[in-house]
Amino acid sequence: MADTDSNTEPALSAAATPTPVEPAAGSPVYAIIETGGKQYRVAVGDTLSVEKLPVEPGSGITFDRVLMVGGDGSAKVGTPLVSGATVEAQVADQYRGPKIVVFKYKPKKRYRRRTGHRQALTRVAITAINA
Image (cartoon, rainbow, N blue to C red; front, side):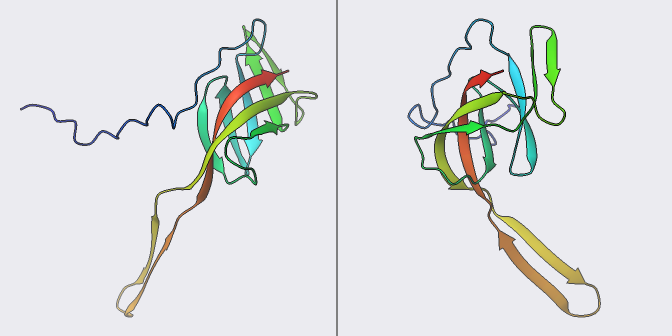
């Protein structure tokens, strides 16, 4: 039986994906940032989707809520934040996530409620980690 690639996602076009940036010599390899009530482990060149941020696509943004900076066998852990550490990113686009179906059901009571939700998201590309 031959495997088919019908379940694979289509690749993003070259214009939609930002070009990765090489980390500078001596810069931290990764950081843990907080935004939108969630924590993300990021490295230079990563692209991630976060809760919607009030910025225009194509502009830059700086995350100053850095919880940890690590790399080269050492790590700086903040209490709760690492002082003076920032993560710079480029906003790729604003979009809405997939539809989530919320279905409430009570058996034998003829109670059914079907609603949907699409979360507003921002796609950012990490360009620099400053410790």
